[in-house]
Length: 268
Image (cartoon, rainbow, N blue to C red; front, top):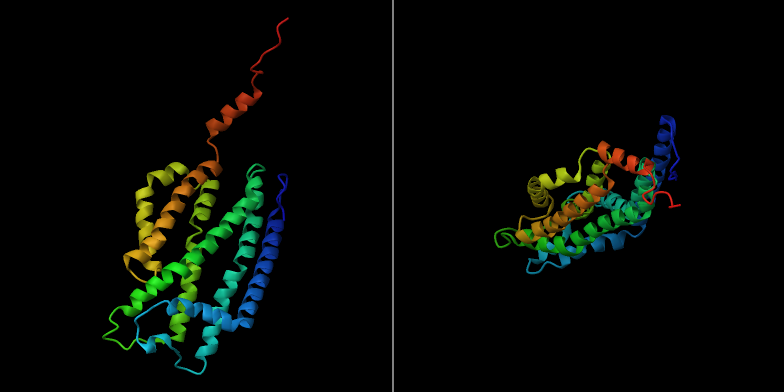
């Protein structure tokens, strides 16, 4: 892993580095998928747990049904892939930061390990919040809506794909600070831009929360919106730290470094 301050890679070296890390990432995902396949029973029981937390539904709602001979296998493949991505997430995050790490200054690289830990924590925190809090409440609202007028059933391809992708998407959305900090680091945005457009950002985050959450009830939307709003505020402060300094600030610091010693020569 190239993290030294003096590392300078050519274009071909960058491509080779990208290929190597892509290969490692693919291998780790494959291992995660294999692990999910081996522990298939546990994975599917875990995906059924949010449904078990829903109460007051007809008995048919708790029985997962299939409508074709190939559906159990195809659904299992989708579930294994998503589970593999979640299992491999810490390594994937490490490989990403290890690849972009040489673009940061020597001072910023001191925070490499905390950044990797924070990014991993954000992803896993989003997954946990979706799984333990948002999904049970969302499914309760969705499956209870009009239950007296419908024969509520859950098809395997719909339910398992919905739950698995929703948990993965929730974890990905919690990487918002990572995206904003990277944009600030390359000079696309800065902390002033984020402060000025805070109101617009809140509207966008509210729309994202409404679209991604499994239901449009206030609880599910707020369960995503409030953490995202907090993460946005944190991103503002982090962006101020990592964003490139303005030319006049750099010139002033250079002038201070080249100036005479403040103490002056010792008196005779």
